[in-house]
Image (cartoon, one colour):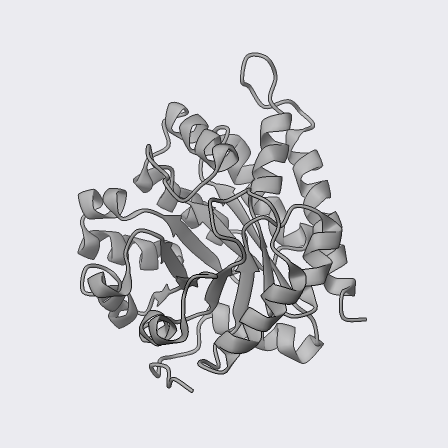
Amino acid sequence: MLAQMRRPLTRIDRTFAELKAAGRAGLVTFVTAGDPDLVTAAAILDGLPDAGADIIELGMPFTDPMADGPAIQAASLRALKAGTTLKLTLDLVRRFRTRNEATPIVLMGYYNPIYLYGVDKFLADAIAVGVDGLIVVDLPPEEDAELCLPALHAGVSFVRLATPTTDDERLVRVLSNTSGFVYYVSITGITGAGAGDPAHIAREVKRIRRQTDLPIAVGFGIRTPDQAAAIAKVADAVVIGSALVNKVAAGLGVDGEAAPTLVPDMLALTRDLAASVRRARL
């Protein structure tokens, strides 16, 4: 088993320890910062923990989100149209932290906005506002010096993706500087595509566990409470993104403005998903 870098306990570590003690999987919710506007996005963030989100992935809007399907691509475009920048994304986290000190926030996205912001400044600002981890999908292990290693040295977890095409030899490389948790992509393709086969996912989770003692979260293609429950039986956490982003889109009026029901409806779906995840191992 691959040894992990020693570091102080983080919010992510504490959350997974609490989940393990409770004998259940966690729910990781993905939303895009600034979607459909900054005020609504802040209200969604504030409501997610009480609705059952154990960890929040906050998407950094980008013009070319190549790993994402139509739903999250559209969310990024809505957020950018609303004026969301990386600085304002960090400000959303800062605002969230004035109300919630416990729930981990993991920023997910692409390297280009971080590179333009400046890696050192980005990491310093991210730590200052309370960011716990990063998922940067277009930086492979061969580019760890760009952001992964500086993030780890600064105390920010760097979560790496493993996929159905990651063989055992490659998995060792993928896990070498991973921290926080491992994100297993359950399908070959983009976010929001068809669901993976639970039996195959279970085998893959077992294979990854032989290489690391980090928690394993499974995402991509999980849309319904039943699908979430099936994954929660074998993984340490279930990641839901496109289904929640689609619920945001469904709450927009013809003018693109958020309807009064958008936030309550989106949080109601989160509660349904969380309840299924929590019941999965009973």
